Length: 231
Image 1 (cartoon, one colour):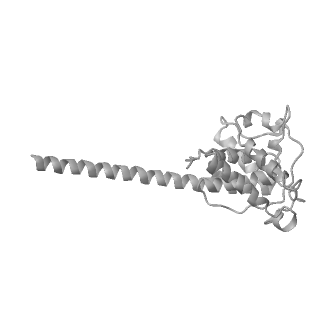
Image 2: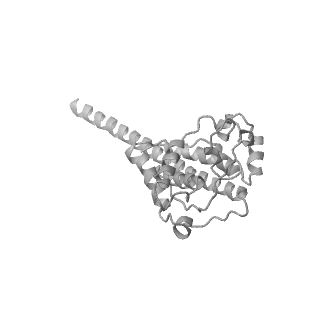
Image 3: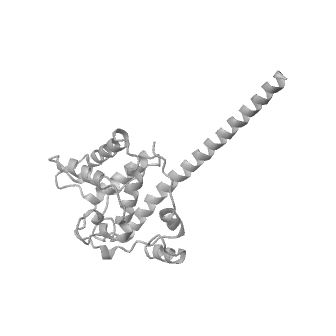
């Protein structure tokens, strides 16, 4: 009887271990899918920017390192993002910055107009209710402006793009190159925000994305739910 009980216990334990391993494998697949979706999302935003950026704005690799006095701008941005992630343990910065970048780039291109304050600025539009990440961008800008070689050099538009890239990478997604040299916009109007609402029909959403030069895959990536599991 004792032998039978022991064998039965071992079988139950083995079954529990297999079930636990199955849950872990499903969780890992879910995380992998989510991180790949994150990368696809930011690549989609770059595509939007390419369609929206003014012709006279030429973006280049390592713009600040090669063309300005603020040679280490990208390193300064990365340092602040890492501080929020590692020291402040704020794993929410990746989704917040992703949404902030999306809201900025889909309206007149990536010009940081979403960061401007005002009674009728883009921030006040109903579609942008609940946006976050402003404190981190403000902190990065303050750090850069405090350095003599960087004062008045780095645009908020580039800061937002670089910070989003670094936050997404810290969340576990592959890193990706960011072209820099953007100019900040000086106009921000809530009336110009034409982002699709959560209640928009599938047909209307697809038509909207096509008007931005995007396709159904971009639609699913940008409007679909992305799972973020902070470290």
